[in-house]
Each structure stands twice: as structure tokens, then as C-alpha cells.
Image (cartoon, rainbow, N blue to C red; front, side):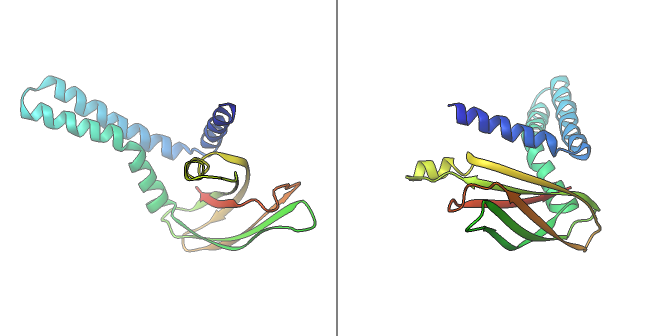
Length: 175
């Protein structure tokens, strides 16, 4: 139970470290539309009220998906190609090289490479759960100005990496 709470706390810390003001504004606009449609639904009766309630709840529950689509698929879309990712055999270190291309419409100012060390699973349930519960997470942030259609090579180096034969998941995010 303690590892689940630690993992949730770690994910929330990572989330608030990498949340931009732009994402919060888009999220708040979705909820403003929710309030407008819901209050209008209270003011009218009949089928129009039902339609406004449905529209308001679509705004309420669709906000995270709308923010994700707008930021990750339209404005800050990236193409990441992992050139190398390996743990050294004779030393406690890890190295990864990732080439990131900005395919979005806005200039990227910061990129983060995240290495999640996966826990070894012994059955299908653990395999499913350990996609979100990690042994350890390493994050390295890079400040870089990456204009649209521009490419940059990032290098992630971790010293004191004791997980030599453990599987890992490497991901990247730019904003």
C-alpha cells in the first residue's frame, strides 16, 4: 500500500512540475463552458434543458481529453526517435540518446526525458499494474528553443544506476 501511495505522490509531483500555464487556461475554459451550459440548463425547461445538461457534462468530462489533444497533438506535437538506450555492463550508469523533432505549431522551450524502471512482473495482473507503478523514475529536463520543423539531439546520462538487467520505459515530453 505504501508503494502505491508513493507512486501516486510521485506522479502528482511530476504532473505539477511540468504543467504549463497554457494547459491550465485551456482546462479552465472547458470548465467555464461547463458552468455556462449547466446554468443555462437550470434556467430553461424541457428538451432544451436536457440538451444543455448533456452538453455541459461533455464539457466537464471531455476537458482532459481536449487539453491533451490540443497540446500534444496540435500545438506541441513531437516526433521522438530513440537512437541509443542502454545500461552499461561494468559500471553503474545508463545512457540514452533521443532525437526530437518539433512537428507542432508552436516553439518548444523545454523538453523532458523520463526513464521509468519497470518492476519485474510474475503474472498478468502485476504486468498490467506495473505499467503505472515503477521501481524508480529518473527525469532530466532540458531548456532548449526548438522552432517548428527543427530537430535536436538530447543525451540522458544517469550515474549510480543499479538496475542493469531490469526492463525500462523511456519517454519524452516537450512544451
